[in-house]
Image (cartoon, rainbow, N blue to C red; front, side, top):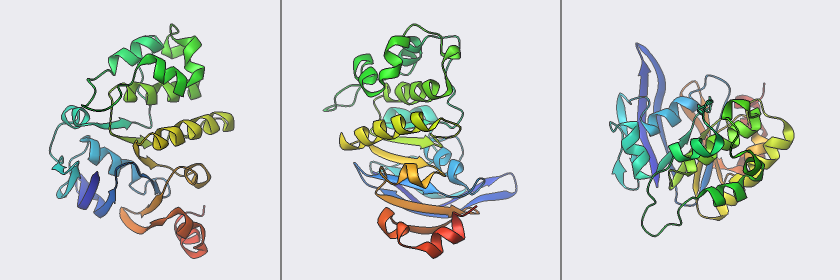
Length: 233
């Protein structure tokens, strides 16, 4: 479904990503792990078109998307939830959802307000509240829900648990597991391995812009040396 092949990214003269290569299958969940500044967010931004690879290729559903504008990539069915959330604070929850609406793809069940409130029950009684007055966890739920209104086939999430209370992290984890069961492909950038483990099938560890490890979550859990080298604080 989504494939990175030899992707290099520069910011000015500084190289941020070095030959990033991995793939994500339909219905699969994968997590990008690594310390702050490793290149996880840049990897996601290169997929959605917010940064342009200097070399290499990115394919989505068999089509090259590197070089396309972000809105073109979104219309192909790749959804992105940024770390900053970027909801519209002066708009209500319902209005934020309407902003994200895109036509569904043939053969797929469209996302509706009803479905989203079933996925994120805390948002239902807040439909008319301005997003500015939501808690951090509610804003994160809204950011994901707004992206789902675009009816994506694959969802990219950048540090979805950053700064959230444990109970909200549990709620988000349950929602993402439900999305995966329904066939949504997921790619997370995350530092919280405990959060990612019940969701992700595979892990890719990025360190200083290189993919240093790729394997299943079970393989990673059994490899103390890798976790110590790349994930320990």
